[in-house]
Length: 422
Ligand code: SAM
Ligand code: SF4
Image 1 (spheres, rainbow, N blue to C red):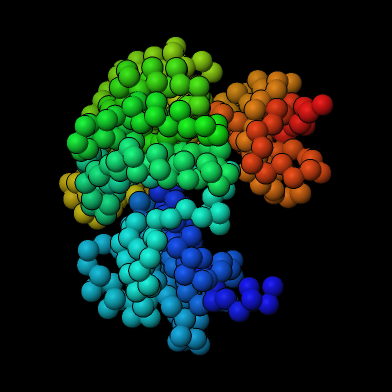
Image 2 (image 1 turned 135 degrees about the horizontal axis):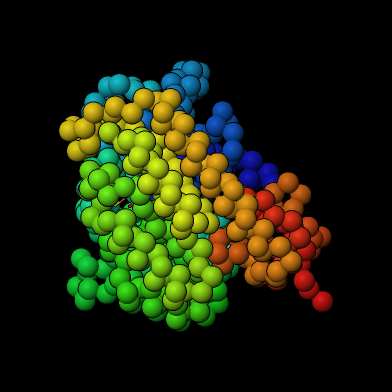
């Protein structure tokens, strides 16, 4: 205990996508191996890292506000190391350093903290091997959706070799991980840049052979790159979960064209129908942007009708926000008023709340398999194979266990139940 208290402390603040969460987890593991311990209290930390996101203006504002808020702490404690990583850190670090002179280090997304000792940056340890793990398999994106800043900040697609991924997953499973989520901005274009051109279906088949691994998920899928082979792999491989994140973004062909998404609403409907036909009880989630430049009421209605018809398990909806450097910000006027964007966003959220209420109510009285991740508010929490959040009470330590849970209560956001154990 004495020894623990003497360790220097690190604090990582993370916003944005799962890729950022995975990178923060990796950073945490690295700091621990360098002799630091985690703290949830920024004021106590010797190193603070902000892992930033700029996908929307609101995320960028949060980063800037956080940095301003940390100014006085840095003034009080100049020995504190303040570092920033993530998509806010672009190639122009000199300019960032001038604007925020109280920041000691800027380092790009996925890069190591270059000022600390060299060492086993990638190693997995018990400290960062929980029941579930995010595994980045492809970095960057080769699509240039007109609204999106990701390809400019994360660069072109670069896949990790299959052996490298297999090694990491085996290591994690050895330390207790039961479920992996493979990450990429566009996971289904995995492998095209590797020597033997393996695809995601090949990788899933390899991972499916790992003893002790119980579940495999992957996100995010691009509808134009989702291959029939991948759908078959989902249907046939027992560890691949019945869950798919497939962002449609809009239900209007004109808007999809302006977004440069590379598919039509009809293509998307066909794809979703085929996935549902082959993968029994699959839970589909999607992303929507409302208020894209020039989106009319009629075009928004097309999105609304698509969502009402396809009935997704989850919908992530965002109001369009122009990102400087993107094609849309350069060429299209942000002409849907903020109040109208908000109205459309609320309409989608309300519609989805009703749909999720009904879908989840259908699980009442059924028994689902839950992988227990940890405790929250005096209850155990975990997820089903279809990614539903489940809470239950139990006096035993259930972390990391796969349990049958009988569902007794449902809401649009989560389920409550009881373990069915003799
Ligand atoms: N690669 C995924 C895809 O193809 O949809 C999504 C990645 S993107 C980083 C995550 C989500 O952020 C998108 O699905 C989109 O809904 C939202 N997003 C990206 N750029 C946006 C913008 N300029 N305004 C509003 N939302 C945006
Ligand atoms: Fe952005 Fe489109 Fe790439 Fe997704 S596929 S990260 S939305 S450019």
